[in-house]
Image 1: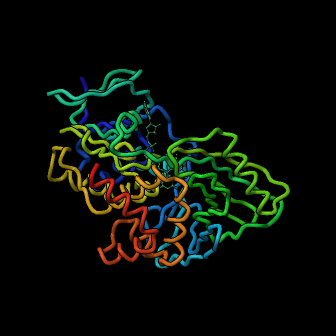
Image 2: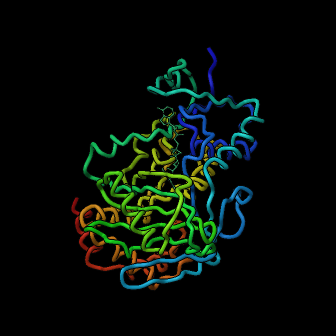
Image 3: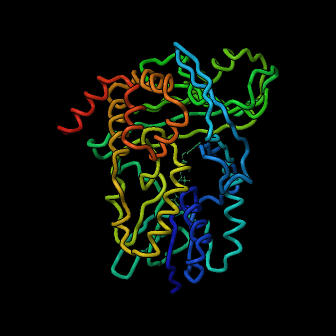
Length: 380
Ligand SMILES: Cc1cc2nc3c(=O)[nH]c(=O)nc-3n(C[C@H](O)[C@H](O)[C@H](O)COP(=O)(O)OP(=O)(O)OC[C@H]3O[C@@H](n4cnc5c(N)ncnc54)[C@H](O)[C@@H]3O)c2cc1C
C-alpha cells in the first residue's frame, strides 16, 4: 500500500497555494504529496482580485491592475487613490496553469482527478475515500467546505456574499479602464445590503457583479435583472455577454479551527481563511499558506495551528449587525469609505493596523449598531 506524507482534499486556491509554498521552501521534496480534486482545474471558474503593495508572486499572470477605484452610495461618490496599494486581478485559469506547471515538475507530487466521498483519521494516519479508490497518508489538508458545520449552529451567524457576474462587451464606451468600482450602493437596497462591483478591462469591456452580503440567497433571475438594470443605467444599448460567473462565499466567524485534529487541517474557506467581513480569501490565503509551511517545519499537531485576535472580534460584530439588521449595511460601508483613506482601510482589512488605527476606521461607522452588537455578543 502506497502511503503519502501529505494528502490535499481539493486542489483549489488554498491547496495549490500551500503546495506552492511547500515547493518554494525546498523542505518537502522528499515527502510524497497527493492532490485530489473532482475537477481538472483547466477552466476559468472565477476571477480573483486582491490588493497588494508593489510587486508580488502573481504579477506575471495578472489580468488587470488598478491604482484607483470608485465607491458610490446613494448620497455620494468618491474616487479612491489606492496608493501605495494596487488592486490586482487574476483569472483562476491562469493561476491553475502556473501552479500545475510547477507541480508537474516535482517528482514527489501527484494529482488525481477523483470525487472524494469521505475522509477520516485513525491511529495509523488519515484515509481518503474516493470513486477511484482509498488513499492513505500521514496528514490531510482539507479544503472541502462543509456548509452544515455553520448551518447546524446559531452562535456564529452566517452571512453570505452571493453574486452573479457577467463579463460584457458593450457597443458604447462607458467604462474607465483604469478605475475599478468596489461598491456601488446606489442601486435599490430592498431592505438588504446589495451593491454592484465593476472591473473594467477596457472602455467597452467589464465584469459586472450584482452582489449581496445577506443571509439569504436570491433567485437567479433577481441577480440578472439587477445586472440588466445597471447596464441600462450606464447608458449601454447593445452588449454581448462574454463570460458568466457566480459565487456564494461564506462570511462567518464560526471557529473552523476547532474542527482541526492532530492530522487534519482545514484550509481555505473550509478553514476560516475567508475574511468574514469582506469575503476576500485570496490575500489571506497567500499569508496563511506561508504560515502553514513555517508551522510544519517545527510542529506536527494541527490543533495548535490557530491564532484568535482582535480582528476576529471586529468581524464578529460586523457579521452580527449584517445578520440581524441587514438593511443598514450600505450606511456602514458608506460611512467608512466616506472619510477613511483607502490605504488605511486595506491595512485594516489585512489585519495589520495598530489599535489607534483600528479606532480611526471604526470611529467613522455608525456607533449604535456596533454598541448593540458588542452588548449582544458579550452576553451571548
Ligand atoms: C466566483 C467567485 C469569485 C471569487 N472572487 C474572489 C475575489 O475576487 N477575491 C478573493 O479574495 N476571493 C474571491 N472568492 C472567494 C475565494 O477566494 C474562493 O472561493 C477560493 O476559491 C476559495 O479557495 P478554497 O481553496 O477554499 O476553495 P476552492 O478554490 O473552491 O477549492 C476547493 C476544491 O475542492 C474541490 N472539491 C469540492 N468538493 C470535492 C469533492 N467531493 N471531491 C473532490 N474535490 C472536491 C473543488 O473542485 C475545488 O477545486 C471568490 C469565490 C467565487 C466562488
